[in-house]
Image (tube, rainbow, N blue to C red; front, side):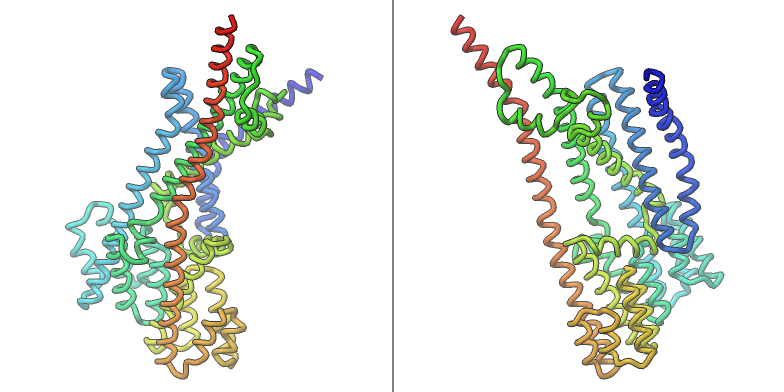
Length: 471
């Protein structure tokens, strides 16, 4: 029996010892191979696997840093994980803002070149002297790509990875329909609004939701870590002290400890990790690791999602209650806006549907436009084709009333405005509710733990004072 137990423990230690090097060195090779694929779902698997790898690396760094400083100065060993998380998030924020500034610079130069009628490679090279080395390198590569006859959207995706997936899709659709000057002017105006923190573009630009999300993640991970430490280290000591004094613990402490069911009540390691206290510790470690992983991935080129990955993830996010309204309405607003521009350019309805689907950056919306194109090519009226394609009743009723190209252009612009307004209202509601909800939940958890931790001290002091008086 002892030999079999030794073998089990040996295997339990051997798996992490062999698995850690495999994850550290094997996963990047797999991620590199997956990102080379042309299929969007394969690229998405590689991007998510990259996020897992960065989270694992972040956990290893936090654990090693905490152990190293914990041996030297125990107090700093406790604080180092949260300190490293905060510094990593700050570095990610700086890197993210720098990338958005480079993308803004490139789009601004392209818009000026098109508006002034200058060759884009010449305008890009003329502006290189006043930019930083990284921006100069991107401008040089993009100018060479355009001189070789490459498309603008593909060149931006290859040589300016900071360009957002929604911008790439709109530029691609504009190239196909001959509306590139209008699309670049609109993108430039949106970037200006984002830099100033104005308008709906501010939600996807420099101001972005990243800082708020990172703040909430750091606070939640910190509270989970502190809660796990209290549950694992302090509450068991209370039980021992109160057993020695023969005093009953306060009800709040008893309830909290019975819910956590920490290592004090566990007979072995397996029971500990299956207890709520162990789950809380695992959850806090996973939260810290995911926060650091997102921050580290943002600092690298992998932080900018390719267009296919963004399209797949937006489709998944669209299935989330509440959040799906923001994601889907934004996708339909972009696609209908692209449809209005495509109709104004005079291209056929199949090309219009293709441009609208590409601009959506959402797999579900793109498939709906593809079905609409197939049904119209088969000879169905626009209203019936929109119904079979799965468009909303209000959208297809407005499109069905369009009698000519000008009516269809106005109808698409009207629907784009309606969807954008609905998205902005939902986004404002999310912004107004998310942060107060996080604060209320975290305050309730921290307040309860503080009461459960300090109430035994008051009871113990009162019992000691009573004993002194009786003595």
